[in-house]
Length: 324
Ligand code: SAM
Ligand code: SF4
Image (cartoon, rainbow, N blue to C red; front, side, top):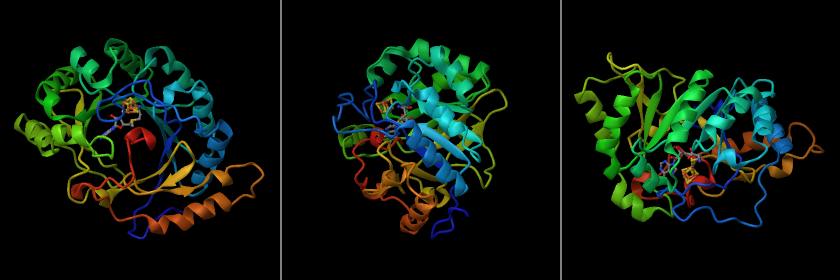
């Protein structure tokens, strides 16, 4: 049984948020920090196991853990192992802000983590501090080295911001010269809470494309299973750049992912509204097959694409609520 929507798009990739909490204050996401919701109960390890098994039964082979910040969960190794032990799941990836990375990445790898994306918006310590509210850049960079040495597939995500771009890309290029890593710029997306920052800081992905091609970077041919990033290589550099440009035409045609929130809702589009509650079906007492049936029933309602270019973000307040 496979997950295919009304537009013929096939889904083998699940982004699973495991918490809404975060210890950083990124200016475009949680500028005032995470405000705890006393009613929020995030998915437990056993619920996560059942969820992973249900999606695997429908042909999902890759799960990315995200948040909020996944590393704030004390039981993260058990979460990773719960997903990694699921028959059919071949890749367990995680997106993190890099907090405690150097210290903990070995345990995450031992639990079954296979791929890691680390968000680093700038290699300049002052800019990094201004953007994230934290001065942990040297620790994060040494964590990236450690994760690379452990042969986890490591990528760096940087949100594309108008006032940090020119200086930032020069620094990243120098960093990539002898390092087999990919730095992917993600175009800043509008959410309900970040309108001011968005209006001031949004820069179209074309600026990255132009910068790269003027300096001899060439886009790599795309394969059908590739996600939304276009990658660029250069003969003088060991590393690569990537670009994720959600405002580009036809971005959603290649959508390959489904999302589940930390509260157990299936979210068919990041910029949609509401979601389909799955949590009541994550109880061990529920008969097998009901979870899969509800996911299959929801899939035809997945929209063809988002309406970001019309300045509509659905009901997405901030990326930390769904996991990006
Ligand atoms: N806390 C983790 C982190 O920052 O890597 C995981 C969750 S975070 C919501 C996932 C990704 O979304 C990060 O790479 C972050 O930079 C990105 N992000 C957050 N808000 C965004 C926005 N408004 N537009 C584009 N990317 C955003
Ligand atoms: Fe936290 Fe990630 Fe949002 Fe930054 S982008 S505030 S690290 S959830």
